[in-house]
Image 1 (cartoon, rainbow, N blue to C red):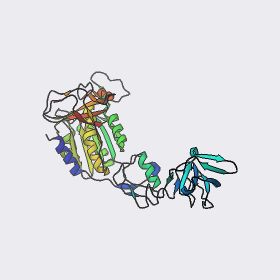
Image 2 (image 1 turned 180 degrees about the vertical axis):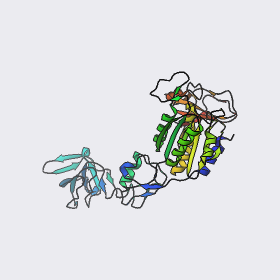
Image 3 (image 1 turned 30 degrees about the vertical axis):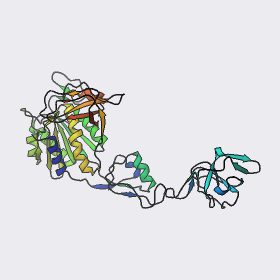
Image 4 (image 1 turned 135 degrees about the vertical axis):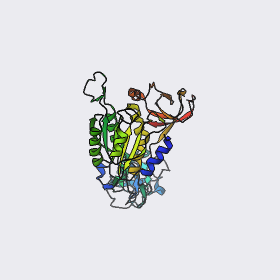
Length: 391
């Protein structure tokens, strides 16, 4: 059995970067950028008015000013501003030559015959200068950035309409177990509904991958091997749930070896999720996840994502948030690193949610994140600042 830290090191050492592709900007949300994006223009591209008002010369502010032109946004002034002249100008419009300030509408008094007077002898410039936000050639977004709505706007500004991004990881999801039935069926006897596969599909899709669900496979070498072979040919990563422990019908590790996977680890000192298998066959990867749903959920968050981060070339991993504990977090055994679900309170603390173990999937519905207790630690005291990984 290896430590969580060793498992992460093994995953990182074996991960391979996915190929890149060019996509339309409108289709790039949640993709991972694989180019530095620089701006091809200055922003603003010209001196422009920051307010609705009157563009004039600051030396004429105490005088009565003649309005010689009206300048809406998108319109270029026809004439320069001379002595005791001004132009009525709209927000975002190009500043006429000769003007060095804008009297805002609220500070201007209209006089008959197209003339105005400033209410004071001083005025703020109210001008956005050319290039004060961005200069041509400036890098705006770095390679390895996940594209969110903020980056969409920035790429559009830079004229990057066909960004280069990582290909989406293809993930095949397989459930094993004769006791598993689909959610639309009412379980009978010893049967239980398959929540793992739908949960993992959702986690994969939210991360930016393309999941494919291969259904429920019975606990036989032939059935599991047949589906694994198909999933291996069609995906970058396979996620199997169940069949990875030490029971008579826990067949997954041996089948993976028969399918050409090198098993890189089989047990990790974490709770929940100890019987986690990770393997590689050339450019294909596989995780064998425990059948208990909280275990599979947490393993995806702390280990599967680690592989996906590397495959996509993400520069930043999931960011944790720091909160004080509203009450102590405790556990009985300390031989493994533990992950427990917590919720954020209205007062800005976190507290453990009611959690009965790795089968208690509904506990996650009331949780906002997970925190970890290292090996050897049985309690984290109230008011201790903890790192919360959002889920």
